[in-house]
Image (tube, rainbow, N blue to C red; front, side, top):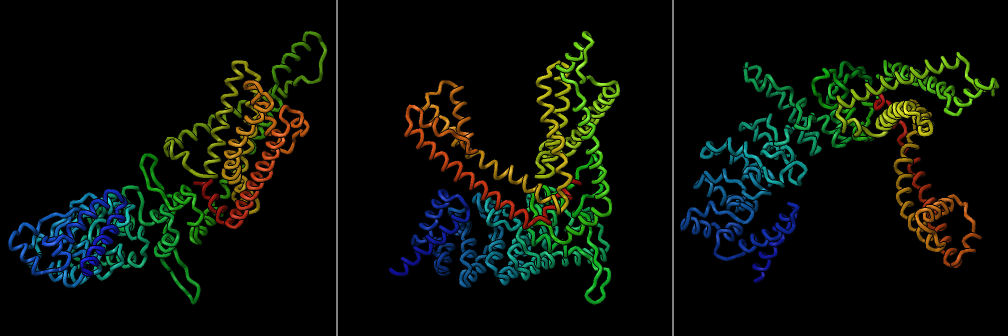
Length: 609
């Protein structure tokens, strides 16, 4: 009785674990319950297999040989259950069955979650190199060896991002589970080192995903060794001659193993890969000279009409991950900055600064409609008010106005070309400094052309108001040029993060309270219509700034309720929310200051990418 209870509990636990690993709890629990019933039900092939009862198994199969192909609730065959149980007794029975029915080694799961898994996959996961060696070395199984080695797990549990993503093929399973001894066995019997999964990931891609640098180094060295042997044999296989090195191959996302590490945000793996790529030219004591390849790390030269993969630096900017910056990347940025980027940066700064000065001159010399009317009256009456523009001022304004229009047109053409090259979505996906710069430039050019259209239709009132905002946007662009410097950059970054993180969150929460309290005061003070509600909003906003008249609330029709709501508003908004905003800003300041150097290095490249 005790053994029966223990058997039943073990079955339930095993199947619940198997069900939870798939992520579909409702469906898997039902299948697990069914499998549990099969396993503990007496006088069935499943109970005999589960208990490693060789006599019972032989009895069932002798009576009905087709039972060897029977399927369970998870799409498994009896041979799969024997391998999953994984004890010596189960493996002994599995060997006997395989020798009697060799074709069963090709059986795979039919369930949608485990589809394609065969006994070689299971043996690798069970970490049993002896049984792996036996499956591949047995002469009776030689006709099925290649089928075993190339079988792919296509079920949902084995897809990329799943809990059992091991690269689909047995070689990927062995590498991703950190079993180099089994890798050697698979390679000995002809496993393909160039194999890729359904996402185009090579074994090196998979090892980056699994964060296994030691296996990565061994596999790469073995691949190079294999290529040397093949070249020595003068093989002319087009697959070997056309494909690039394994570590330079792209998956379907256009990523190499190195750029994949950056894309996944694996800082340690990225640093290891960068160190692994370096070549030492010479060393003298503790001093050494090493070179680092720039391919994949920085932007390669390419033709505009050809697509290219992103570099590590571009991915770092795209992902906005300052943790990926390491000494190698910092050294690269510093050298590029000192060698040529600084000159480009300074030239851009002076061009934009001079352009804004010209824009400033045109706005100060610009005649409004009222001034033009006054000038016409002066001409008629002969009386001057001293505000008329001289001919030189008019000429200066005309030239400056033309320069502003031409500059906005050229910049617009450049930005449109960038949108076309990068794609509209990618153009706006760039984060922080580059995104802010793109927004400011696009907004400035749009406003300049809009002002011209308003001027053409003589809508001077709207033109003047829009021009005021345009001036602020134009000079705001200059903040981008002080970002790369340690002296001013962190403070600009702080302002950016505070505005778009802290203040934005505060504003969203405050709007909710503002709408509620404004409605409450509108009801208490008998506000009428939209005008009354807007008046209440104005009072609440002034209360946020501490500018409220207590006598006004006491003099209302419901003074006690009005004063209570006012006190509640002051405590909740002025004291609580404002102090929370200050605390969030303090945290932002501390975080930016702590990583100031990394952020400045990142923004230097973001400005020049």
